[in-house]
Amino acid sequence: MTPIGEVIAANTTAFSLVMSGRFGDELPVKFGSLVKTETNGLKIFGVVALIEHAPTEPNRKIAPHGKPKDALKREMPQVFELLQTECRALIVGYAHRGALTQSFPPAPPDLHDFAYPTTDDEQEAFFSKPPAFLRMLLNSRDVAPDELIVACLRNHLPRLSRPRLVEIGKELAYLFGDDHRRLESILLRVHE
Amino acid sequence: MLQLQAIYPTLERFAEKVAAEHKRLGELKPLLERLFRDDSLFVKQWRDFPETLQSTIAPRLVESPSKRVPCPKRPDVFTICSADGSQIYPDRLLNFCLLNFSQICFHIGASEKPAMNAYAKLYDAETFFKNYFKGAPPKDIEDKGSETSLMRIANDQVNALRQTKELSALLHVAKNHRVEARPILAIADGTLICWTLKNAEALRKEFIEKLAEFRQANIPVLAYKSLPETESVAKAVECLAADDLQRAGIRPETLSDAEIFRAYLRKGERSAIFQSRSDIVEKHYSNPDKVYFFYLHAGNEIARVEFPAWCYEKGHVDLMHSVVMDDLEKGKGYPMTLMEAHELAAVKKDDEKRFFELLEKQCLKRGVRISDSAKVASKRAAII
Image 1 (spheres, rainbow over the protein chains, first blue to last red):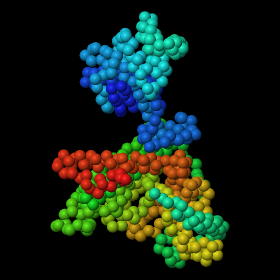
Image 2: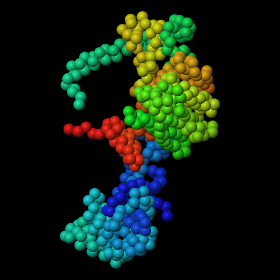
Image 3: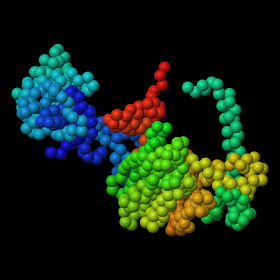
Image 4: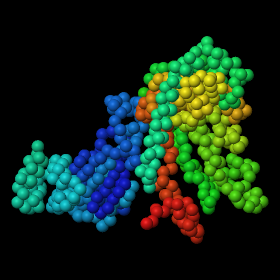
């Protein structure tokens, strides 16, 4: 399987990647995708919560050059070599010796591990569990959790049968308490 | 902390002086246009050079000084290479130096990936003196049987080594990335005149050999000097037209080449081509590699562009002029390729800190603590 990127920062709640491939190529993941890393037989699952384009050197500033992108690539070929796409995934579960659980792993992914897209089987296994991952997403402070939940459910809709969607709806209703408008805003957008 | 209030009145007087000087330079353009005319006595005397010209640094004329060449059209597709270097100098306690080099190659107007590499080399005193400064006198230390490891590496020697190795790095990247039938240009930072190698025979020889290799490989090479402080053309003007300058209210001895060509050229134009009469070039460079140069109005500044004579003879000047201007526009006033080479080569404060931390760890493993060295101490933050 082709890696989507390499881990450059990690703790037990989230990990960050620099995406593989050249800047400007089609991104191998989307906001809300379920991705994984694997360290010594420990698979760690994360939901992509932030994708960001940035210079490879933090001290370099991006400046406008006033050229169409194709011309820029021909005339200033280094510009795209000095950019990269980073993404941050919130950890939503792990699997060890075949047992998958939606909770934080005992240890974070190793730095410089590769991250991969999840397979259909892994997605099936993840979404067939009671949706405890929703609380983990809602608890994270530095993302827009409602948008992330909408994107995650939309990205994996083929894995979500009607009974599973009902279960997710119930869990969200429970988590939001009386905030029906918030719940409605999520549920309506999942099927848009 | 700078106490600006204290210098404010002096600053005002200083600004007045600068403005007055600037206004006087306004008189320079009509004067130069008159002096530089092909039929002027000034040009005749300069051409009759060196019999009539007293200065030893005034250059020879390769083209008529009246020449002002607008920027020619750039080739649609070309390759441009650059290399740069930076260093960690030795200090009192650690007798070594580190050089970090970058190599850049951009294929402009084409689809090939750019090459952007950097590599570092560490030199201890023994290797340094054995390979590059044979017979250099030991400094600041007792000479115990003239062992090279006991000699102190001087900063000037590090600069000399860096200048030579930068040219090698440039030659290497240009040779490795050239594409057949496509114009190529190699750009060095600074100068092709190896001033710093005056007392480093082995390095000077290597530098001149590398320069010759560009010719043998038919790779045009130039050195771009930003904000040059040179006064060679100014010396010719001073020698031959001091009275005219004084009449215009300009002090001849303070005139610089940059001031002359800021007055004479418009944006994008290059000056006439001159030949350097630097001692080191006259004595050691072969004829096809003698250093020619022109000044270029780069927009925000006057730059000096040096290149070997063979590049002129083979008609590469238009390529140099157009490609440098193109690179300047992309770099918003400084050549983009040189800027990238510099970025990649620069040993930044953080890099230096990490290097010393690593060295410190390695020494600790061997039971030696170097954290008291001047180098490490200098990194400490000031305390209150």
